[in-house]
Amino acid sequence: MARAFRATTRGYTADLDAHERRLISGLCADVIQLLEARAAEVSGAAEVKARPQTPQHDDDAASTAGSEPSEIASSQAEDDDVFAHFRRELEGLGEEVPDAGMAPPEDPVLARLLPDAWSPDHASDRGEAGQFRRLSEASLRESKISDLRTARMLLESSPVRLREEQAPIFGRALNDLRLTLSVRLGIEDEDDAEQIHQMAVDGGAKTTETFMAEIYTFLTWLQETLFSAMLDVLPDE
Image (cartoon, rainbow, N blue to C red):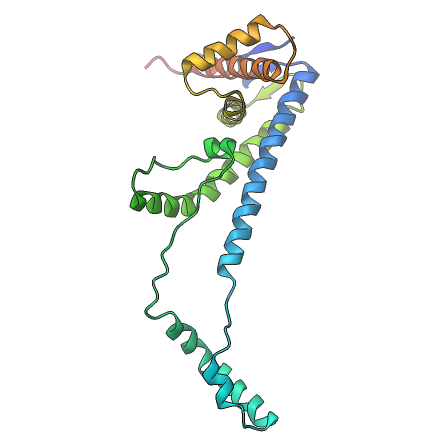
């Protein structure tokens, strides 16, 4: 049976059964997979967007129609060497290509884990939010993946021992697991959270929802004991 986190001379310690550690580690792996899939999706979209276009110009074809093959090859080589760069620059003149930034994830779990910096009300705000997301999402995503991987490593030991600098990392990982489950359970406010807690306490028929409710309640308790232990060692001032 799980025993709450407590402060020690070397950090923080909690006693978790093997199946509890496996459960939390498995949830970490699931969220890592979700975040990595988002990274692959964004990378693929950026690669397509950045792929260079090389349209054939009618005037180029007409100018070489009556030339000998060797002359055509020579002319094209010179054109590539001397004018290709300028042609690419000139083709973009007069065209406005708005930077739409990066669209938020469609998956509601990812939307909760990787939120916009603010809630845009107007089209201009949405554009700014997308540009900010393009600049910031990758670092947030990688930070969360790193936290979750560290948590999995720490869960390999029994009891679970956290050094002082590892405690916030483990706490953030637990919070991301709670966020993931809260979306799946439809938790939007404190009333919803209380209903889920009551569902876990009451037990009853073992459905997927009641099982997730029990895990959510367990993770909430574990995180609270960790933060309480961290607060206990803070100086009074």
